Length: 498
Image (cartoon, rainbow, N blue to C red; front, side, top):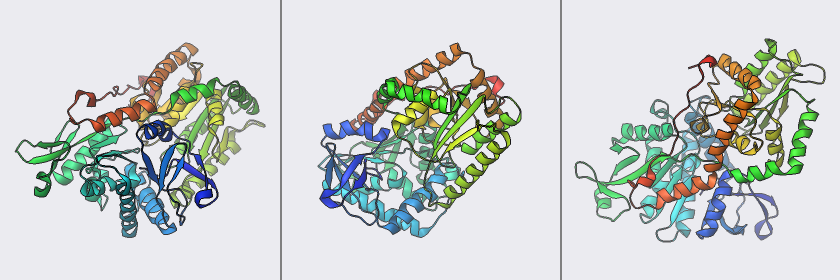
């Protein structure tokens, strides 16, 4: 279950509708699982005020959940993306709290839960995805204690000092605690969630386990993961731990080996005037991605005379995102003004410093860009994972290229051989860019080989299998639920940051 179905509507209505499989790692990971387990995927088809009957696409049974235009505005654009999204991303942009948005969020979550209850077999596994559906696990648990319920949060979970701002903080926590397993991207996210549970409910936590106290009526039932707390009180244990998501690495390797895509990579460099160094940023146009910070650092390096726009070019792909939300419209204006100023001040004839592309591209073109780029800039101010960093690494079959990665992206926990930066530290970011440009090939290849080993061995198929394995285990204390998260890397001393 996810906010969106894994298909995009192409044309037609009713039984004549034509659908195309959506790109993305989640779809690639779960397609084989759905086919093997006779599953259904529940989600919104992406169009307001339109209802579709259940249908099949690429061998997967799909159940559309309809949303009205008002619900899209209040549940999705409002509560999900203008309340929860900024709150969970460290209030980089101020969240808005409106009771009518909360009411719509509850109503839509109930509709999703009812859709699952209508089709779930006895003891079925229900895997709920992401912050738009945080109330669903409890709704399912209350109605069907037999269900095996997992929840995965694709975005960060904030520290309690930030989370506590939410007027409906208890209801969200209660909703998530309906699951048997609550998965997060990072160790810190799982810890933040456990601390919020302790502060709001006083429940005992032991390592990755949370003891949810049972009511008298529940204590008489036979529930999965039922146990006794230290004082003999009946509890139900919930496993809350990180399961860092990944990509279909083999698919990116195959695309990177395609002669047409490799030829396109060379063509891209020629079209850009064959700069000595090509830098690349690929993001949704979102205030969490740190696009303005990397442009500021790049502009200052041009101003300092460290390099010229003829020597070093930056391609910034910024795909459109949530343009009906005011904060995003404002961000677009700010970024485009910044690009114009830097190019106006420092570009040379035929060699603009920043090539800004406010549009999305097919995966084949993105892999060509990854192959063409000497340096990949991922400077998120806060990110659950950031799969672009992993896509770049998987595409570099030549074992070359440098990844500059924000320590505030979940990928920093795994990709330890990237150049880790604090994007708020502009001097440190500038130093990392210079380091990347001047890095000897031997060091570049050593780092990239280590990065590729991690990405190729911890792909999206492993992620889904690990989560489902933890979900179906009868004992949350099973050794298989131990963490497999590498230690944080230490920044080099010459970066100017801590």
